[in-house]
Image 1 (cartoon, rainbow, N blue to C red):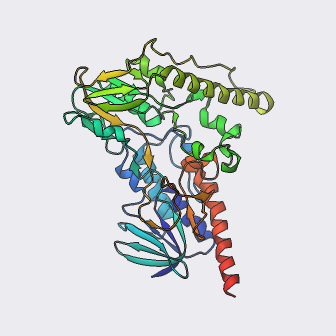
Image 2: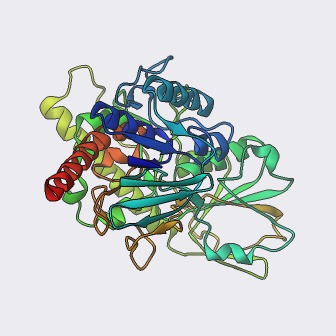
Image 3: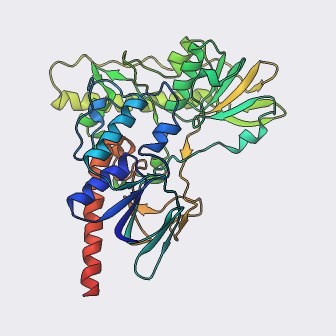
Amino acid sequence: MHVTTVIVGAGHSGLAMSRRLTERSIDHVVLERGEVANSWRTERWDSLRLLTPTWHVTLPGATPSDGDPDGFLTVPELVAFLDGYAATVDAPVHTGTTVTRVAATDTGYEVTTDRGAWTCDTVVLASGGSNVAAVPAAAEGVPDDVTSISTATYRSPDDVGDGGVLVVGASASGVQLADELARSGRAVTVAAGEHVRMPRTYRGRDAFWWMEQAGVLDERYDEVDDVIRARHTPSPQLIGTPAHSDIDLRTLQARGVRVVGKLGRLRDGVAQFSGGLANTVRLADLKQNRLLERFDAWAAEEGPGDLDGPSRPEPTPVDASPRLEIDLAREGIRTVLWATGYRADRSWLALPVLDHKGRLQHDGGVVTKAPGVYVLGTSLLRRRRSTYIGGADQDTAELAAHLEGHLAGRVRAAG
């Protein structure tokens, strides 16, 4: 079977790209290993809500989601939104179709699946950058009598047996699950490495309102000093709740959660932690205040007159002598929950497009060593907004235009 473009993945990015190609009358298919929004359906915990407000969840040609625009969608609400979007844009999705190989041919590319092969002129990799839980090597040291789970398999506190829990990671997932487990009555310890602290609301407006208005989300990938590092910046410590609550290490400690430094290794049942916790939280507080200073500067020049006055969150407290070692058995820790992020699975790409660390090489979504191949749905793809669902609107508009130009160039070259 031949088609002009194969899109791999029917999440929000793949569906948005389908809409853009339809607008340009470019024939295509969308191949999805599971159902539409499969990762959201199968790899998220029960209580999760988006950390972006509903008004920020925009896709090309989409009807706004029902409900409070200043609220935060639950996972079932998001899945229903994406199901409806797929139907609205009439995306040609082939569900239950797993891509096993993408390789170059003399005339384009061949995409092999468990249900046959497609040849095409262009490929859009929209399977996302969060396919596999990025569990560090330290997990190999978890004793046999301690449960080891990741955010990809955790669903609720019911999945966690009796005893204390060590949550490894302090970005959005880590702090949210530490809070949920503490509320369920567990004794929780958080091992905190680098993290991004951010208030849910500031001066009466949501953090995303401020980032939109102050131009933070419009910063381009080619304007960032170290784009590789920026693309691996942890997600901000935010949670979407009806109460618009803050969540960070300070609020966790107020709930009784113990905070220690970054996990170094687990050996003979003993977890060892970095002694740099004070510096880690001080840097997170400093960066947060710099961001708020940027918000204040914008407000002074262009902001509306009904904003609350400037303020600063209290600094994150740190124990004078935070623990450097914890014997899991002695302290009753029966579960280790790895909230250490995700990584992309690119093992099915038979193309010379990965660097020595297995990262896809691209220039703003245009894969550099495979003309006609594009990537979507990764952090800071073209702008900082690319990290979030609403970023697909601009990303797909620009990459679809590039793809159309690539096809036109092939026609001119053939002629």
